[in-house]
Amino acid sequence: MKTLFILNESPYGNERSYNALRLAGTLASRERSEVKVFLIGDGAACAKSGQKVPEGFYNVQVMLNKVIRSGEVGVCGTCMAARGITDADLVEGSHKSTMAELSEWTEWADKVLVF
Image (tube, rainbow, N blue to C red; front, top):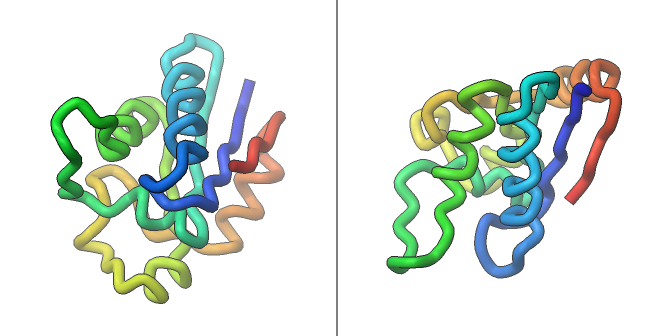
């Protein structure tokens, strides 16, 4: 199954992105699953590398890496610019993306989950 996750929420402050990435990482580890994650709006901040979190707290970068190993992570370029996030700031393996790519991914997917 091909699943697209669209995350609109910041990495910390609520648990929407956390729960989406938990599910995306679990699906990405399954043999017959293909996963793509698109980060848009405040969700773009999920791909900011080097975030320091308190010990024992979940780390979104680690969670994204589980998806990146077998899937793709795109980050809305317009949303990145609005938040001062540069290409160099992104988690390794993720990439600046576009609405055109999101459209392609939406057509590719069997299921689209929006968080």
